[in-house]
Length: 119
Image (cartoon, rainbow, N blue to C red):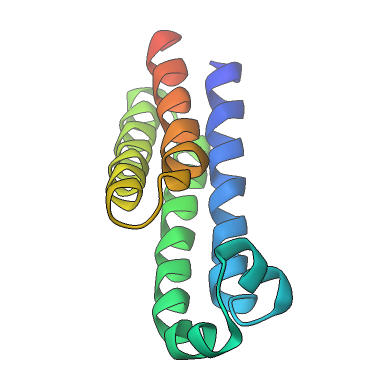
């Protein structure tokens, strides 16, 4: 179970990082470099990115909630939030960039497998 919790925590940390990048660094040099944006494009899409960042924060909060919960409820929470992340990552890979599959969906999928393998 500790390995599963570690995986959940790592995915939560990733999504907190996404929140920071999308909400606060989107139109800053680091954010533009990571997302391949120009300043003009970043300024035009900043509000959309902030919205995405907020959703990533909700996903991280759900994962943290699963770490604080106990028993089968904790596993159910982890499964739900990790599943949401996998689906969002696959959709993002199809519609935006294949890189999202590896950065977002794969870590969540691995955590999902580990959580359920050792449950």
